[in-house]
Amino acid sequence: MKRSNAWHLRDIILLALIAIFCGVIFWVIGPLYNILTVALTPVGLGPAANDILMGVWCMAGPLAGIIFKRVGAAFLGEFLGSVVEMFLGGQWGASTMISGVVQGVASELGFTFTGYKNFNWLGLNMSVLTTTIITFAWDMARNGYASYHFGLLIALFIIRLISMWIFGGLLSKAITNLLDRTHLLQAQTR
Amino acid sequence: MNPTLKFLLAVLIALEISFTSVWVINVVLAALGLIVILWHRTPWKRVGLLLLVPLIPATALAVAMLMQGRGNNNVHFAIVLFTRIYAYVFVGSAATLTTPIQTLVMSLEQNAHVPSKFAYGFLGAFNLMPKIVSEVATIRAAGQMRGQVLHFWSPQLYFKAIIASLNWSENLAEAMTSHGFVEEAPRTHLTVITTSWWDWVLIIVPLLLLQVGLFAIPLP
Image 1 (tube, rainbow over the protein chains, first blue to last red):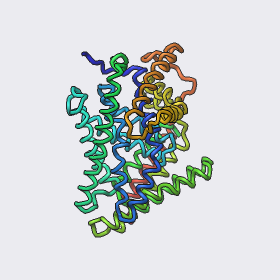
Image 2 (image 1 turned 90 degrees about the vertical axis):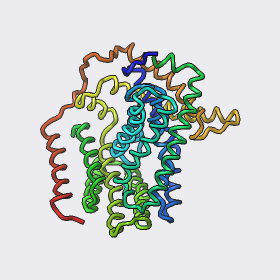
Image 3 (image 1 turned 120 degrees about the horizontal axis):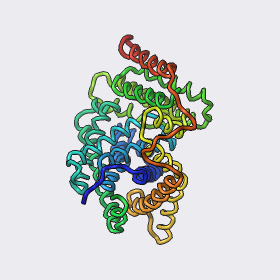
Image 4 (image 1 turned 60 degrees about the horizontal axis):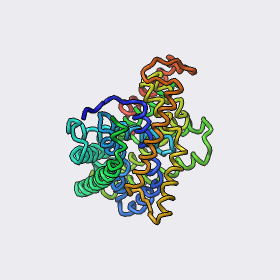
């Protein structure tokens, strides 16, 4: 099957809608992050809340990647999601866009490494891996992870990888399995 | 100030303070952001939330650094992380709270030359926001009627949301096309957003001052 890489109005709207839907669903669990952080802070593990939920925030990228199966989908899905979050009243304001770009590039890279040929388990897992590594490197600078002692650093990385794999990997795959059964996507994204 | 340049400035500042550790600058930036926010008559409740909510991640990062850090000046770095969060929040909100999304998208289309199909496609989808919020509530309620609780980790929740998106995107794209929207066609604009020399001064001068504060003057 020959795939087109061009973005048309309908695809752009669909992608934005999916990103917004994800944003709204995540917005519902916003309090969860604060509760987790408060609970973990007294033992000095507050940042772990960030890693536990990272998969949920970075899900739109891999999901958009395997739904649209074309260049730029993962980046746009993740980035548009962050823009939506920014205007929904996310507390970070314009800084959200930086995270959006970092996460978007990170999840896109996974598909790039497969040469945009594999949009199945391999591509998805690559995307999960690149997202984990790059967002973690970013947090090492931005949130000062680089100064933690080594054991904690490894633990946080593993937590983030598992979270990414459950949401970006397993859940995205489960969603597309359901979608494949409807045969709606083949008709839509030619 | 030109919306595109305003966001660019906020993003560049946030990016630069992510890699530098001068807490005095963070405090100054947060204060300046707060002044801009207050100047635009942001409701007090909103300002209060902006002050309170970041306290959670800021404290978490600072406490973690004090307890788990391995350097010799953990205290200094904890203060840097704490103030950095506030600088992010206030600089970032100074941009978002003073710019409606429509203005930003229009400016991105006209000044940053983002293709109009992306600008209008995104805007169209964004304006469906109230429908999306109620659709999520409907999907969850429909699930509950059949004794099915849909959590944020349930594939069915996303599946149903995507099916709705497929439907709406088709309708919206058709509606826009029938109103005369052509993807690559040149467009004229009702409101033309310009970039004056003053806008460039407003982005270059603050950035220069930031470099002086970060690198020329030895601040803690």
